[in-house]
Amino acid sequence: MDKGNLSIVSEFVLLGLCHSWNIQVLFLVIFLILYLIIISGNIVIMILIITDPRLHSPMYFLLANLSFVDMWLSSLLADFLDNDKLIHYDHCIVQLFFLHFVGAAEMFLLTVMAYDRYVAICRPLHYTTIMSRGLCCLLVAASWMGGFVHSTVQTILTIRLPFCGPNQVDNFFCDVPPVIKLACADTFVIELLMVSNSGLISTSSFVVLVSSYSTILVKIRSKEGRRKALSTCGSHLMVVTLFFGPCIFIYARPFSTFSVDKVVSVLYNVITPMLNPLIYTLRNKEVKSAMQKLWDKSGLTWKKQET
Image 1 (tube, one colour):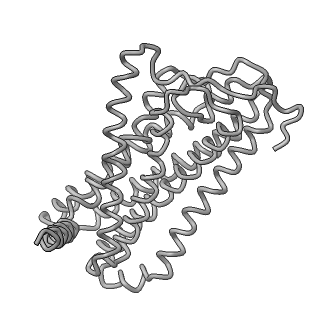
Image 2: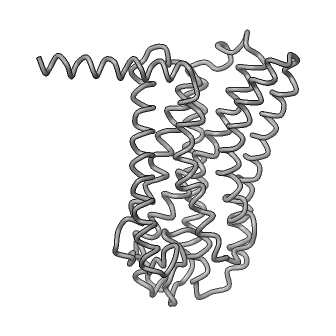
């Protein structure tokens, strides 16, 4: 990329979550543990869904894709675990593109999963017909394509801005609001375009999700069925709120950055990818059964190798 007159700054400094070295070390240990949990948990979920024929259904196909997205979304923690807080301009732009690509894909995917639950509960007799293999693949592909288009727009608007100093990014990764803040130009119009992009996607997806789960609860007549649906939808809504709430807070307002933004961003970059396997799969009897089967099979293989 020939930056020419577009940029003078060649690298940025990531300030991290705080300035205290002792607290930074504490965060380092915590994030390392969380990163290992997220990676291992989502890999296990994908292996279970791929290897167990009982989990070859639209719901689990979408869950496997969600685990894949969460695994990549949490990869930003790898940069936090790096002691080098200097990041090259090109690397920063790539990181920004990757964050919004994967993040937007997860938003669309969660919306598709809510639609899947709506069809399964409200139209059970037509579920297999509506949620066919072809439609599932098309919806997943559309989620990734939507994330790519969204991220491309955000990135193009960012790289067109001149950066001539200062170069300190008040976060532990490169994101649009703190990076835009460093531009040596009037960013009002750019901010409006970005807010209308990111803010609209975050808010509209959240509204669709809440409406979908609310419709499910209204459609169910029996008290027992409503109680079970409320238990499932309530846990799903908790994770959805933890993901979309911070996104709406950060991206659906003009980019007057606050110091709390980087703490809020931990929720959708760290907490949500860790909770998704627990909420969406490990509370499911079929997944627990498949996990037990895989565990018993691996244990049996290990004993045979010993003998």
